[in-house]
Image (cartoon, rainbow, N blue to C red; front, side, top):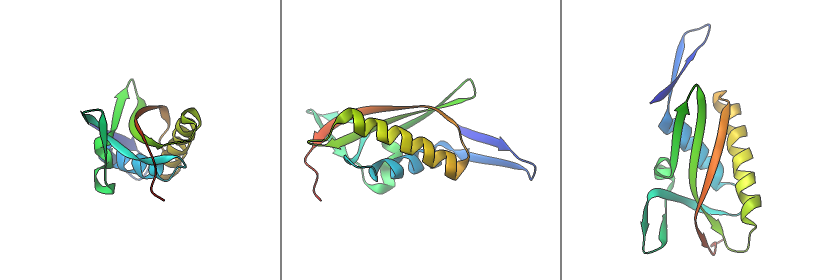
Length: 120
């Protein structure tokens, strides 16, 4: 699936991978995030941290009734308040997608896949 935007100059098509990559890049820059986790790969209770080129594997972009929904699977840093980290990620992702692509995001759902000690 992709997002179709009609402008006065023509038509713009934005793929879900582009939306996912921007959302993932924005999320990992937020305080308290260790990394992105795969949405489908949980083995023995351990979530794998995705590298930069694979952020789209940890994000699902859904379109329902002309509304855009994003599901993000993240790993948070130990000792941070999870609700604050999730709220910060939600607001930053909405802002980044609004500014860079001009998209209105209806919801950003955060799924915590693990808690790890960050290596700063």
